[in-house]
Length: 290
Image 1 (cartoon, rainbow, N blue to C red):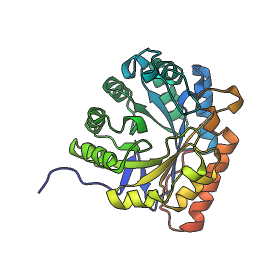
Image 2 (image 1 turned 120 degrees about the vertical axis):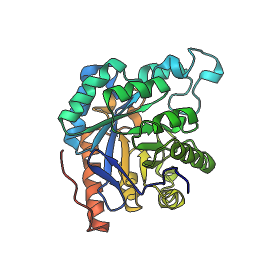
Image 3 (image 1 turned 60 degrees about the horizontal axis):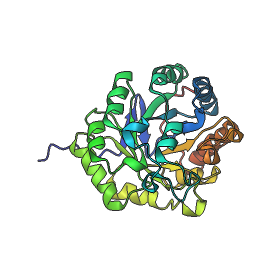
Image 4 (image 1 turned 135 degrees about the vertical axis):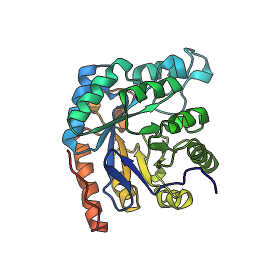
């Protein structure tokens, strides 16, 4: 018999079980909405807690480790709201300074929020291990970085994989890579890699299809402008909803156009809970810390 880990229909973050029959795990993505201000980042975490979310997620990257500081066309973004910007310039604005991480984690944990991140290179994984994140998120753009996937799997932590830029064969290769490196707790996020995305591009019917194919829990990473798509996703079996969070869209920034403000995020969480009650009366009780 193979000694490789089998896929699990659930993942566990601390004492929270995530999967079919359990309450939807709601993640607020900070991304660039801190505007390179630590005070703003902490205010976002406070507002995320008040909104009823379960977790705050950031991104752990250094621009010089993932791209080149070049204005050549090969290193410029095309066809999005960031059209014409260099990748280096964009990552420089988006990244969360590493010296903030411990303070942000401390703030989140003190409020009962889970705190985790998307690493973009092996040194980011080593750093996140030192501060003790409970789970890892693989960004859509990194799903084909198999050495990074193996590095993350070897930590023994659950792994959430976003699929927005992947073909079905690339998704399968990512799952097999994680499993072969020792990861049994894998959760996949259906994602449309458009910023912002249109509801017509969401293709939510893929959620139960992916879960059936791979035998793992599936959620949604959403870039649409409202809250309808995440709520519909929950009715189709999404067990995680991730959405970008900003204090004020008028402040601008790379992600503001597809981020929710606090009142909108709270309304989304409330709608998700109502949707859960309308389709399933036997959700397993979870400890409420928010």
